[in-house]
Amino acid sequence: MSELIDEPQLPARRPRRRPWIAAAAAVVVVAAVVVFVVTRPDDDKGGAQTVRIGVTDASQPYWKTYADLARQRLNVTVTLVNFNDYSQPNPALKEKQLELNEFQHIQYLANYNVTAHDDLQPIGATAVYPLPLYSLSATSPAALPAGAKVAIPNDAINQARGLLVLQAAGLVTLKNGGTAFSSTSDISSKKVDVVTLDASQTAGALKSGSVAAAIVNNNYATSAGLPRSAAIFQDDPAGASAAPYVNIFVARAADKDNPTYRKLAELYHDPAVEQGVQQSNGGTAVFRQVAPGELQSLLKTVQDQATAAGK
Image (cartoon, rainbow, N blue to C red; front, side):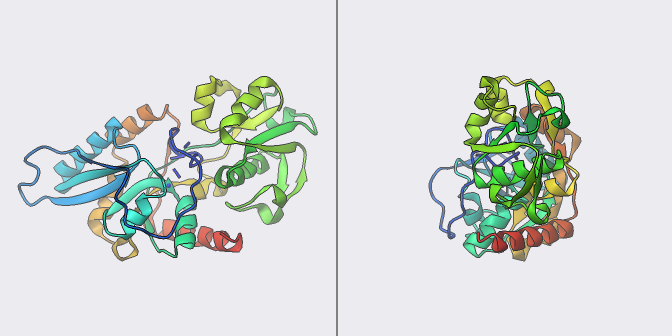
């Protein structure tokens, strides 16, 4: 799915995204779509290949930079197809209404593939958006008193990642080390009391003093005015626990080795594009470049976890 796409939120995906939306069986997508052709009027000349990319933030300026570079360097005309519903870009890709999409992380795609019995594949990584633990009374996780209340989001995707953050911070232990589909029932030992709230409420609970610390997605932290200095811990974007939350370019399985599509995924890491991404996301992106084969292996692992969790 930037933070599914931090977005409710694709945890830690782009701050404007919504929460976990269970993937439905593939359908032809015809609603809530806006097409942005971010190229010049003469771009259809010179044999340029057109590639349709499904996104959820086409109005962001960095996509124009990206499309201009695609035309100049790859002779590719990028057509952005914007969706306002996170359940739509994957079915649209399956139905060949798109060539690629870029809006989700590995965990979201794994859940979609398992639920929809699909086989979409990642072909390039973009960024991870770390998920912070905030406190207004403690300066580190170790400073939280035993039995302190800590809030985490209650939606499936953010809850699992929040628990992994708490485990990395030494506040809980999860059965078998936890997975991208863990829930509070998987807590085997704990230093703090974990309470689950709607993702939009964790910042308010922290500010009211009803909890000592809280996992707060970036958009809600910004809305609540939480200073970055109050973030006492976050998952390591290069660590194993954050790997399922790497955001990705996705193609149909038949196109996973397409050289043009892979070059388009790599183009996201042009310095001009990365600079624009950071400007649009408050400097929270941690860019990752991961080989397609490694991403596909990770997807299989997370899909196996999803199946085991009964998704």
